[in-house]
Image (cartoon, rainbow over all chains, first blue to last red; front, side, top):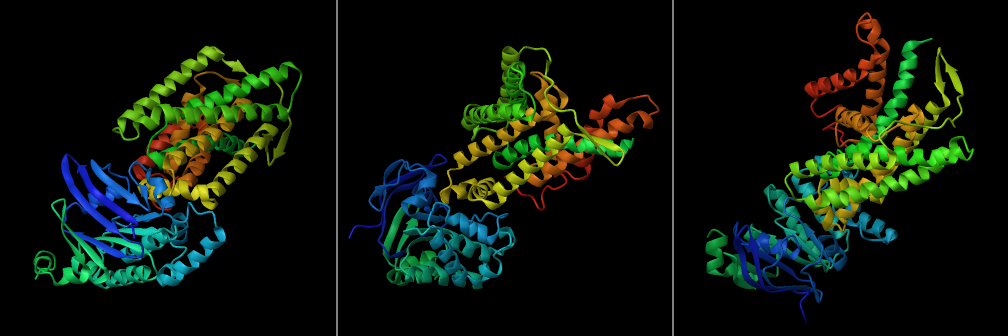
Amino acid sequence: MSALLEVKGLQVHYGGIQAVKGIDLDVHEGELVTLIGANGAGKTSTLNALSGLLKPAAGSITFAGQPLAGMPVHQLITAGLALVPEGRGVFPRLTVAENLAMGAYVRADQAEVRKDLDRMFGLFERLHERRDQKAGTLSGGEQQMLAIGRALMGRPRMLLLDEPSMGLAPLMVQKIIAVIRQVAAEGMTVLLVEQNARLALQAAQRAYVMEGGRISFSDTAHACLNDPRVRAAYLGE
Amino acid sequence: MDIFLQQVINGLVQGSIYALVALGYTMVYGIIELVNFAHGEVVMVGALVSLSVIERLAARGYSGWTVIVIGLLLAVPACIALGLGIERVAYRPLRKAPRLAPLISAIGVSIALQQLAALIWGRNYLHYPDILPKTQYAIGGAVISEVQVVILIAAAVLMAGLWILVQRTRLGRAMRASAQNPAVAGLMGVDVNRIIATTFAVGSGLAAVAGALVGAYYNVGNHTMGFLLGLKAFTAAVLGGIGSLGGAMLGGLLLGVIENLGAGYMGKLTDGAVGSNYSDVFAFLMLVLVLVLRPSGLLGERGIEKV
């Protein structure tokens, strides 16, 4: 089976530095894969190349058999790729309901959109309670849920999550991870980019470990959790 | 005659024109944080295009509001095309440039449009033909003319329409989202460049109507008329809180009323030392005061509805 997302020999330059030095990475339909690594390992540059914010210096990115390079950002969601950006990026002065509606911006099937909206409110009860509140008034965790819900409203084939645990209280982090697992269990393909390696490895099936712009290690998440090198470098043991 | 009421009426009429123009400033600022200094010139072009149409129709013996409406039917598309052109040529290439660059570009466009208008329409004041009814209605010791009534109604309808567009439609939601976070709006599938262009188009359409109304109201126009009007409308936008739609509307009306009250009472207050021709002083004095006491404008910051 060919991968849904296939990255080959990707190199990305950022601010005069070669941030990504030729990586291979693939995610198959229905998988929950994580990309972990320390700050500055090249995770964000990789993601920015995927979403078209940075132009790859070399290599190829293929999504559902289609090259992503050169695709304008606003066509990603139509291609089936939804990115939940680092820092959540909710629209602070739109209401919760309006934020979710923005996620379905490109969809024309209004009846189905309404159903999905109800589904999101079922999945995220807090959002339902606050549907008419401005998103900027939500807590960080609620905003993260909103950002994930909003991305799902576009009915993507794949979800890219950039540091969803960042800046959240431990309890909220657990909730977010539970949501990501649930979404994945329902069949969504997910690439989870995380600095919190332990968390990401507990949720994911497979993992890529990034270090100095290269993939230093890749295996099943379970194997990574038990690998002495990963344990020493990323799990603080 | 009730001077106070009369000045309030005149102020609301003038203020609703300011408000229509101020909306164009505030919408563009809301979405790309640029003060579009060429916006006043778009109003001027709207006024002069409609004037040209009205003159020709009047020469053939047509009169009444139908003539103004036909003028608008040409002025609005002309200004929309102009606004889109300005954005495309003068601002879009500078989207990622330092903030001073598009500002200078805006001033350049403004000067260029004034000179272009001088070439087309000449440098003299052009007078509108006498085609509108002179009917006046008495209300509580003051009078309001039919022209004033039409301006008030037209402005109210347009502002209500804009409010619905921005708050209740998919396009409006995309406009607000793009103003708040263009990068993420892009991820949602919004073509932000198109939204920006649409914002210019809407603002320029309103400017065209404002231009035609201002011409019909004061009966004169020339290639420099956009400058002071634009400056006043920008003042109104800042007064209300730039980026805020409600602020532009409130700021416009308030500025119109203050200016007219100032003009009405200036002579009395200063015992004839200065007269009503100093009314502009009131407008800008008000701006200075608001900026000192509330730098974000009356409706700025909190409750802001950026577009």
